[in-house]
Length: 311
Image 1 (cartoon, rainbow, N blue to C red):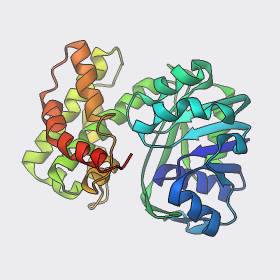
Image 2 (image 1 turned 90 degrees about the horizontal axis):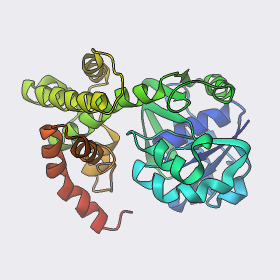
Image 3 (image 1 turned 180 degrees about the vertical axis):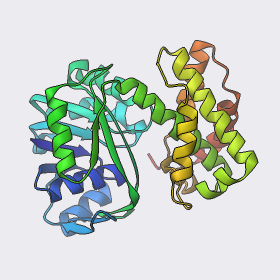
Image 4 (image 1 turned 90 degrees about the vertical axis):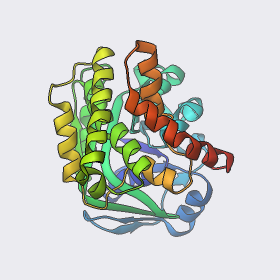
C-alpha cells in the first residue's frame, strides 16, 4: 500500500513519520521551508512513542511526482482543503482514495465535490502534535488516535487495510461504522475547546478549572451537540459529558491547534470551526449565542493574520 501524506504539520508529520518508520511506502507532499528542510535534513519526530529521524525522505511539492497512491491522507489545515482539492487528483492510483484528517465536519464534503464522493472516505484524528521547527514534529502525551469510516456510514476492505497499516505503525487506528456521528462528537469537543481557549488565551488547566470558563465551555459544547442533532446526526445523550471528560484528561498545559495559531498571529481554522457552527446554525435556525460571541471576539485577530500575509 502506497500512502501519500499531504501536509507535514503536526498531524501529517507524525502519522506519516510513524508509518514510514514502520516500513510502509510513504511519501510527503510539502512546500516552502518544510519541503527544503525535509530534503536537506529529513524529518525529525519527537514523541513518547519513540523519537527518530527519517532520512532520506520522499518529498515533493508536485503531486504528479508522488503518484500513484493507494491512499492519500489529507492533513493540511481545514481552510486549505477546498483550494487544494482539485490539484490532488493526479495523486490517486486506479483504486486509490482520499482520507481527510482535519478538525471540523466539512473537509470530506469539500474533497468529494472536487474528487468524487466514491473516492473520499471519512476520517479524523486526536493527538497533541505540532511543527516545532522546519522538519521537526513534536508529539506530547500518549493520545495518538486516527479514526476512519466510509461516508456517510459503513466500513470497507480498503479501510480495513489502512487501519491495519496504521496499527502496524503504533498508531491507535479505529474503523468506525458511523463516521458522521463520530466526526460530530469530535466537533463537540474541538470547536468548543478551541474557541473558548483561544478567547481566554489560556491553557486547558485554566479553562477547565475556573467555574466561569468551564460553564462557558460546557455551553459551547451543548450548542454544537444541539446543532448536530438538528442536522440529523444521532449523537449519544452523554456526548457533552464525554467531551468534558476528554478536556479533564488533557495534560495541564495543553492548547488547541486553532488556539495556538490565533495566539501566534497565524491564519487559523476559525472559519471552519466556530464559523462553521455559526453558519450552519443560521441555515437551520438553531440558536448558538455562545459561538456567535466567540466568532465576533476572535474574528478581528483572524482577519489581522490574513492581512499579514499568512495564507
